[in-house]
Image (cartoon, rainbow, N blue to C red; front, side):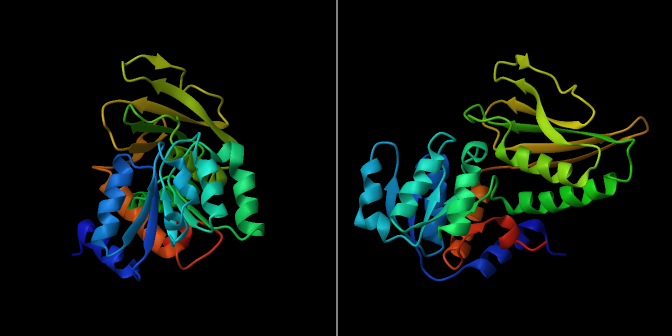
Length: 270
């Protein structure tokens, strides 16, 4: 029997392509891990841009990159895309929190202006599988109105946005398939000190996403379907950031050969 770890690395090897020149935008914990994995897969890091060297967006080194991998903040991500596109560089991004304000502009740039962005709220292969299960379960549950649904996402205390981008993506997948829900809404927020703001008791046609911020948790997402008779819960629990980093490099390898607005649905065919 093929276990998940073997599947993960076989898939990674299968998707590996030619040597690439990669630029990194953002050099925190994720950026450093992406660097290690990219180098181990035979790629070259030609430029590293962080908060203190923004002028390097104008450099020849940055412009030579096949792909830029961007992990920064909700406030800076969109501007980073514009700077990379201006240099003629494709972008792979895992930044969240920018979509509501800039989503239409990004879609127009990719669909009408020839720009390329691979965006995902989560690059874990396990999350891609979890997402497929989530969509299938929601389609089944559309037939069983006795079940109500709630979501809880838990992340480290440094995460700036809530709900998480992955949490929103999962909720949107459910809403698209569940006639009795018209949208998602914020549930409660549990702060690192334990204080709680808000509530997950919401209108029946809304799906609450609650957020918990504690410790150094890489990411936990749970979807719970509850009825008077029983409860069904599916959970993805990331053990480390390594899976996210490898997924981002695999996405960069894919993006180097493709154009437009790309996502994990293009990369993984479940």
